[in-house]
Structure formats: C-alpha cells, structure tokens
Image (cartoon, rainbow, N blue to C red; front, side, top):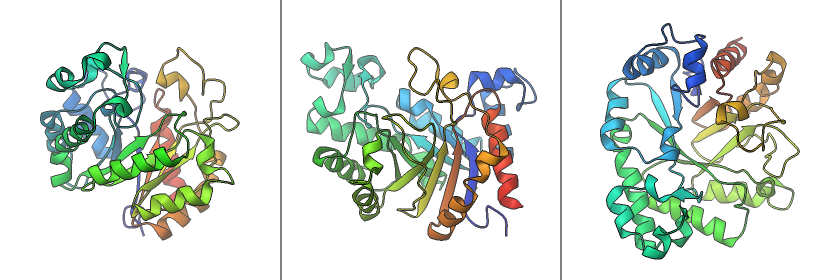
Length: 302
C-alpha cells in the first residue's frame, strides 16, 4: 500500500523560500514564474504549507490562483494569520478598512494583540481569514489551518478558552495547534492538553525540534483529530532562540537518515489512529527540506 493510500502526505513548509530558489537544488530554473514554481512543486509533492499567510492575511483572489495552479488532489495547509494566534501584529498588516475600525489607543501602538481588540473585531478577523480560504475549502484542497502559538502562551484557563473560541469561530475548518511552550506537554499538563484538543476536534501538531529550551516541545506522537501532523523543524540548537536571524537560518538543519528513522514507529502509530497524516519539513534552508521529505518518503516506503 502506498503512502497516499494510507493517507500519509509529505511536503515542505514553503515552496517560495529564497534560499530554496537560489540553491538550484530543486527547481530546474531560477527564473521560473510563481505559477511555474507552484506547478512544479505540486508535481513532486502532494501537500505544502503556506507560510506567507502568517505575516499578512491572504486575499481570496490569490487563494483562488493556488487552486487553479495545482492538481485536484493537492493539499494546502495554511498558517493562521499572526493576529489570530496571539502574536504581536503590526497595524499596517491588517486589512485596510479593518485598520480604520481599530480603536485609536490601539492603533497608536507599534503592535496590536488580538486580546486587546473588541470582541466584534476579533470575530471579524476570524471571519475574514476564513472567507479568504473559501476557494481552497470549497474545492477540497484545504488541509488544516495551523495555529502556532507563541512561547508566552502557556496552559491556563484563558488559553484554553481562547482556543475553544477560535475553534468555534472557524468551525467549518480543521484547525491544528502547535505549542511553543514546554508546559503544555509537561507531566502536569500533558493529559489535559491532549484531551482538550481531542474534545474540540483540534489536531495536535507533533514536533521534532531542538530540546532543552523553554520553547521546546518533546517529540511526542499523538493523534487528537482526523488529521494528524508532524512538523520537522530541524535540530539547530545554536540558532533555535537566537535573535536577529532569518527563519531560514533558524531552521537550517540537514536531517540524517538515522534521525528520520526515529520517527518511523511514531508515524506508523499516527497512521493507524488518524484518517490522514501530514509530515511537513520546516527545515527550509536551501533544499534541505526537499531532501528530508524525499528521504523520509523512501524510508516509509521501504
């Protein structure tokens, strides 16, 4: 049985990273158009994660172009806009008419946080993000919306409440939650965290990444919804919490075969529990992610 027949999809967390394009290790030509690059990527992998939607909300027109440029069976996982995941959000990155509705005392600040907005604007932000993704959703090409929480969001009543509220606001979609605070999975909170996600149909994002930091999450494999997901961040401990570097440098890590093999039994277990498993390589420096995805695919098929 093939990986696709088992519902296991492998891909990377970007198809447009400049270091990937410049490396010459994947795309046949450096001067390919955006349409050609996406088409070429989709000919090689069944799923991709969209990272740009974290920095600015997408437009329905652009999302429609993604639909048109990929095969019917292709899947997009989409990273939630940073406002929705409680990250600091520059005023200029908001929708233009939305900016005008933001209270003056918030608009004057460098960054806006979701928690500070009036409830009606919070709901409006979720609604607009959801509407923009409708072309993917209506064609069956939308996998999960990734809620990657910042390190300062830890398990408490407010955090659980917000996740439940977000799940209700985006109830038409499948949400996946990635934690960046080790307390969510420590001995005290592990069972409650996974039970909460399962109760609300939220995917727990399993993580491979550097250990030993407050933002580190242990490499636990658990399926809490119909889609399970693993994101491979690499193990570059030197750069994991380093400030002032690019995302490509932070995730610059070339997995060895032995490191990927560690995940084989965990992936097998996820495939047994979930309808679909997304394995996403976020070591997006040059063609490292591409090579890792291919290597893991070979291991799973052997």
